Image (cartoon, rainbow, N blue to C red):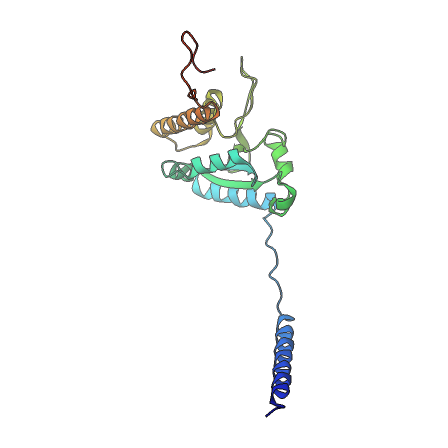
Length: 219
């Protein structure tokens, strides 16, 4: 029995080596699944236009990126239970990913920047969006024209009075089935969001100690 342990050790090593070889042989046949790349921009738009023609809607093209906070606010607005059906009733939405950082470049739709140039300009900022008819002709985009004191620019997620006004104009011109009540609900929502954003960027602070007699309040 005094030589049994070396024999057992050799047997265990042999078994382990065999198992390792078998696993390596098995793994040699494992092929990683191919990376699924986003569809090219012409394919995305062609499909959206076909669906729009069949359903009596227009196409809402949205240019966005994963890093874009304002894009996420627009997505939350469109996904809100009160408005999700309104957008669905009026638009076939085509989202195009552009201007990604190096880490997410593969998420971009090829040809997206060229399409962005056609529908408002790659330097307009994100989110940029435009409403097209079912034939692909632009009805209106989110770049509001200069007028009076307003120098114009991309509306993005509407968070200023002039941006909200332009967004509602887009809906009036490009959403064929939208109602006056739905427009009012959108205006109310966007104005509330704008007020909340303004309050968050200018918080009211309370002094740690009362001001001296005759002193002012907060600055």
